[in-house]
Amino acid sequence: MAKKDNTMTYIIVALAVMLIGYLLFRNKDGSTGRTGYDSLPQGCYPFEEVHEIGKMPGQMFLSIIKYLADGTTSPRPPASATSNGRQVEVKNTDSALDGVYTINDIWYDLDGKIGAFRVDTPGGYNFNYNATQGNPPQPRDMTYFGIGQICLI
Image 1 (cartoon, rainbow, N blue to C red):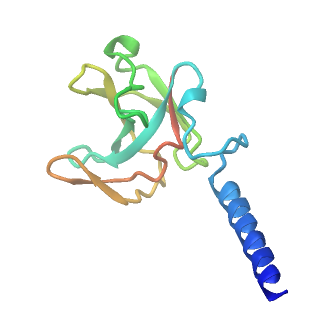
Image 2 (image 1 turned 180 degrees about the vertical axis):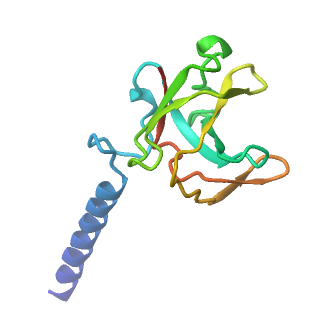
């Protein structure tokens, strides 16, 4: 009888772990996973990271993820998609960065696609440098990696 009780305990624990995992990693719309690249609205791109610009106090870069999970498909828009003076909207960052920003400048990757937007830093935003990136490695705030969205307006 003891063996049967242990099996039932393991099943209950496994189900509890799965339920907790589902609740932790589901998106606000109820879908599972932390990224929803396939379901992004037209003109929206997956958020990669944000960082201050040392030479330009009060400004930051909003970066778009370079490759999707397959490692080869780039969701980045072409260089012609927008220009300086236009606007982008950040969504899905639990209001930390959510808002509309005027594009001060655009950084293009080596493929000629838009990789980041230079915008004014919103008042009160505290950067959480939790990763490094680049060569040489520089601190980056990747809190909303794959969660946030950058949308062209």
